[in-house]
Length: 476
Image (cartoon, rainbow, N blue to C red):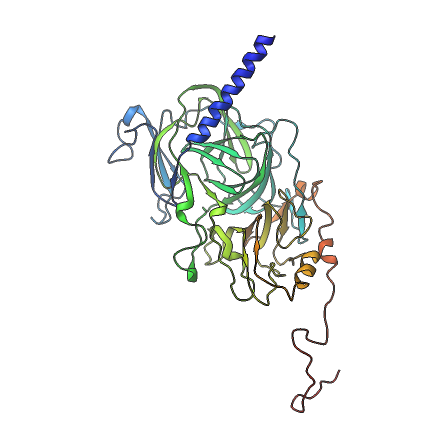
């Protein structure tokens, strides 16, 4: 008994050392939208053509297309993968048992409801029972349809174990992963990514990936878009530099597994439903690849914010990291916007975000720290939803504390915070379970109830000057 438990401990320690070594050896390629080339074995990439009769090392050539073949060249996205066995080598797909009942990709009255009320959720507890990324993924809201190739879904996840002998493939759209607690070790067909809270990762439609949890538990947010891909926003009058720099986006380098993996499971999300297929090898058997359709990650702390330097408060769009545009100029299917640490210097200005009603719908999350417009109740790992034309803005505590500093508005630095927003032109429907969740904050509206009238017949911004003959006293 003693010897057996000792051997078990030795094996666990050895596995942890191997995992630690893997983390230390991780290498990336730099750039957004680049055409990358990567090979785990020198000479594995074919020269002069994409699909030779016989590929180097006896590999199979396989293309993955993220856009139609005839898309304009500047928009076309595809990669060539050179793999030990092609991805087609698996048994037929069957509906996953048990079915996952909290994933939605076509939003209608059968699975979701419209609700113009301001909504807020407290952080969901990470479960005690064994739960991997797939089982811990659930939809909060969304609009449109993956079948019609237009729309989005916003999910959250809670997990406490890695995906074992299985890989996930989203045939519906791109995933933008925002971990809030616990790192994600993501194996993809192009290589591996280590994504920490404060970083994001994008897994494009169709790529197979598996998520392990180096820290044992993880919680976070996921945005999914249908029929579009994320791109960097145009900078306009800002000029050539600023916001998210292309070189700070990191793509993986080729890495592969060449081993028999009996009973390996591919989990395919297709039309919001999950299907499984069995195969006897790892899908991460790509020895070399090249192209511009690739998973990537980005560190939000590298974002270069722009801000008002004299008066007024800039629109949140100036903090856009990634955007998925529509055919209408300036209108996004989904924007990913952050509220990072920055200096607040505007004079004679209410510096927190202003009260407003927006034709766009806003879903907000908090990675760490406190959000500048909500003194209480909006917690890391929580979320809020302010739909189209639903009024929102700073809570009572924030407003009163801000105007109380009217004579002491020195420049101040916002630190130790990272909030974000998924913003869309589409009106989201909210899933039934999200509206019935025990984590839904039914008292959210009360954060504004205390707002009182400060109206006065005297303009407090001007000195009290008696009216002259040229300025007759107004009648009341």
